[in-house]
Length: 432
Ligand SMILES: [Ca+2]
Image (cartoon, rainbow, N blue to C red):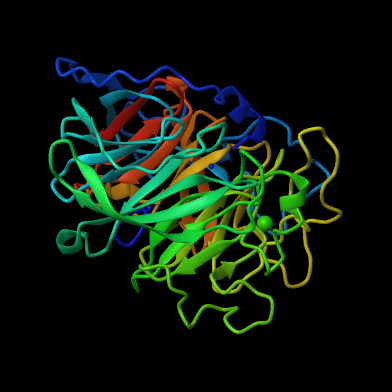
């Protein structure tokens, strides 16, 4: 699961997705579910025998920043692995207009957000019809902005609350906001009692890097991942405790500040901050121990996987493994005292859009594996993690040549994906 109750980008590639599309067409009720055989590089079409072979890294392109070396073996380019799990890919729904997140309702229907249009759709179990939820606030839907994540309250069965993250239009620019609202499951569905429970500050005028992933911890608090807005004015605030930019924050379900947050009472610090020094965190998930992991969009050559622990500084922009897309250097060094090393990094980048840690039973070989939605890499990336180190990497679905925007584990143990863009699809992975 992405979180206790539920779970982003090559900067320049996002330009490609920057234009608004015409209104999306609803999924046609008569659309047949297509079964697409799983094939292509890195995917088993026949069961393999014996131990999982671990071989050369799946990445074969040269690094963008060859002078930067990993801090420990297998911090990058872990041995390539080849799953023995046969699976098929079902196309459940779509097309969606720039979908960003999918989440399950308790009865098996799904929410899907459409980023630029700022729409929240309810999708039936078979993915074949949709209804737009009324009452969604206006969003700043340019570029990387718009309506992003949706998640359910841990007590949703009784309180019917949902949480949305979005780029909020403000005087002087915009910023990420988190909305709590009651979901009214009527026709047409709508939200009421809306309340903004968190605003990323300060407001800047940028259409990028605002994070947006929402993950409820097992203690009922809510993690909100943020970003540093891409522009230099924001980047320099990523390690500044007086700013939310470049942080992961932790708030109570009503937006209050938990008294055990690490910087509560520290002069000049924003008390919602949980960790600092992030560039743009679009994906986060809890592991089986309830620990938070996050994937971070790096610059050219610097995407990261981090284990997120209370009060830590993850170093952006002081340290890292990448460089500017212009080729200019950003970091003098990859390491510094007191700054956390990524558990894993990618050079060249994969552009991670979402993270899911598989906890289900349907794919026994994959239990505990990390799945990363790859945008520019056009792959679902599977990581084998042992003792908090990546010991194997595989790229799945590469034959589809689709940017993967979101990945979640359904309550039924199947894996659900959204592909990116103006004709995004909802996919379901099933064991074969
Ligand atoms: Ca870092």
